[in-house]
Amino acid sequence: MTAISRLQSLDIFRGLIIAMMILVGASGNYDYTYEMLDHAPWKGFTPTDFIFPAFLFIVGVAQSLSLKKLKGRQRNKKLLKRFVILFALGLLINCFPFFYYDALHKMHPMALEDIRIMGVLQRIALAYVISGVLEHYFSIKGLVIICMLIASAYYLLLSHTGYALEHNMVRRLDLGVLGAQHMYKDKGVSFDPEGLLSTSTVIINVLAGFVTGKWLGLAERQIQVDALLKVMITGVVITAAGYLLSYSDPVIKKLWTTSFTLITAGLSIVLFTTLIYVVDLGKRGGAGWLRPFRAFGKNAILIYLISELLMRILVLPAFEDRSSIYMRAYNTIYRHFGLYNGALLQACTYLLMCWGIVCFFDHRRLYLKV
Image 1 (cartoon, rainbow, N blue to C red):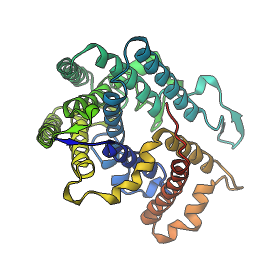
Image 2 (cartoon, one colour):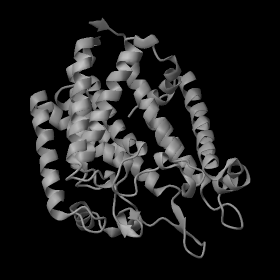
Image 3 (tube, helix red, strand yellow):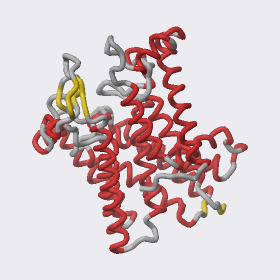
């Protein structure tokens, strides 16, 4: 058993995921983005598809640490507060910069009836509060059973109602509850990849992180290598189960299918336990090269907000030909390094700029606590 003062692997894991979020969202030209840095069009799986579920897994691990000492009204108050703040910040991102241009390039204020309701932070908020309630009332064994029931029910539901973009139960529910005008438009079709029904399996990713944290005894800062190995093997088994299930249940991130859930939850467990082994236990010589990502991990929500809002400003029409500053930078500078390499280089430049911002905040010990 090894005692640790601070779980550095959690900050690094979170930082790696946030850095990847920024990188894949900052391509200089999405028509020339490498496949591994873009989401699968519908069926399939790319490294980019792993980013969001990995972050949700991290949310679960953090819950096993942060909610440990809270009980009763204090716990419920914290859950509700974080839910409201995260959901509100998500709506802020959806609304910003509070106006849009029509086909004739005329500016109009954002109308309430056109605001997209769901999004990344909104999904995190929902998964956080629901999983937090479940973690309070059920044992670890009970949570595992709940995950199995959710996974099975969702698999049966989609297998009987279909997996097509325009014909699936996720879209039907969102159309009925949210309305087409409040949903994301995917290839001209009102379909929200952060839909309400598909959030049910998202909860499994969060609970997987919570259960992993409990199994490893992270709250007590005592880590046993044997326990770490057992949990890692469990992650491998879950990943394999998801892969086998994909023959009857397609891997589709936008529907968050059961196979996708199992694969990403299993991979998250494997990657996280590996980071604990390398970073916190100092095995294999440690991983000093990963430590710069701690700045991202310690201020994840703040730098995510900054990166999203700043990018929305940079892609606004700014010149007579209606091109944006970001597009102009690609066409005049980065595309000369090659269409694909230039798009990637511009994204890396944006990532480095965000890293400089978050390092400044880290140096000043300024953190956004939600």
